[in-house]
Image (cartoon, rainbow, N blue to C red; front, side, top):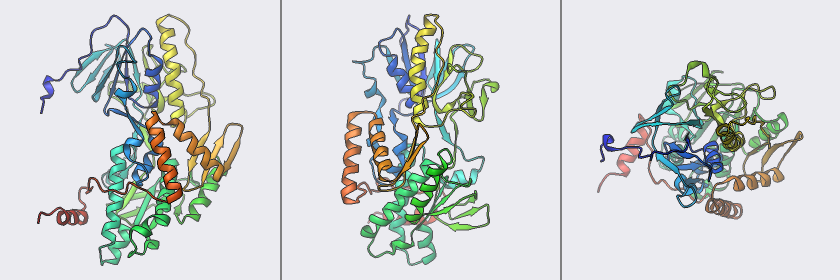
Length: 449
């Protein structure tokens, strides 16, 4: 292995203004694309070498899509043939010094003229370390692959155990959080229960599989309209999902989920989709942070700095219309990234900056086959098959890269006619730390003859 001390960022010196972008999400890539051909050196740092389309992450977790169908390599997006003076480095940023204007990484420091923080969010466990230890998050592709292996392993074990209590625990799935991720995941699992699992496990009573969706507020999809929440509730009930509202999960030890209302659910799988917080970087002054996000003005400048910016989910821009900041979806990040590219040119030319105004294009959520809900501008709310078609179209068009669009669309067409989730593969068995049952199972499975 190459010693870390021999690695360098290897960014060439330049006479152009240097823009450093931390994060290759929706905000970061749209900013970088709009800077193409402009008089800047652009450097992007990210801990992963791909841009992921996270709204479809739950389909990877439920064996509907392969991970490479929702991800595109960043180097492919910004090839040297098309983007002059663009440099990507696969590295974690450890600290920023906004006074000295230096970014620190694990393998070296880099000075900047303009810095853009577009790091997005991370899973928020609200300080509950036990839930963090034993639950399954769903924020990254490795999370989705771990969850896919976990669920398929549960079915395999349930099919081979003679202990009815253990079998039921393996067939109980608890999803915490009734937002879009939780709702869409519950719908996908319910569709698997109805159309896929009975054929895969003919000797097992799949009707005993339970899907629990736990939400702390009084309705599902709190960011969406009450009409969409009500439709979502009915759709999930029709699919057999057990919905528990106005209740929080108090603890989970890997075997049993304890709810605030006193109920207990024996389960080997608890999926945490209950909240996120900003993926902050050390070095920012405390006064620039509020509610785990970075305070910015109407130009996405971090408060107190003219050359430091934050865009997307990490940015907290308070306006009269959005007093709690913009919604944590892709569109604010995309629009802020595109506008910031124009404003960086204006800043360089000493021109007046254009304020950001979010264009709300609506919200969508899918709840299984032929079921979705939509809140569109103009106070338009609808659900059912037409909303499902709109959801499919919007998500295909939003994918990055023609190949990804083609792969996802062909997968969906295939599944529409066959009811098949075609990627039910345990490629890398997952054993949660401390899970003695699964450890024994896979010790036997992997034992040499």
